[in-house]
Image (tube, rainbow, N blue to C red):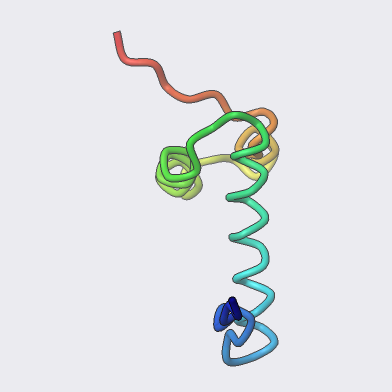
Length: 69
């Protein structure tokens, strides 16, 4: 069966680089045992208020999901 790979055609080099960054974050989240949707939702909410010196805490290997009591 021939599979189409339309995702390879992002429209421009810059769009392809952005897509690659997002796909890398998603796969890294999976490899670290996180649900990608929960990870991205939390990180995108925290990113605007995160100090630049603490951006590394949002990487999948250091991120911890918020546990509701």
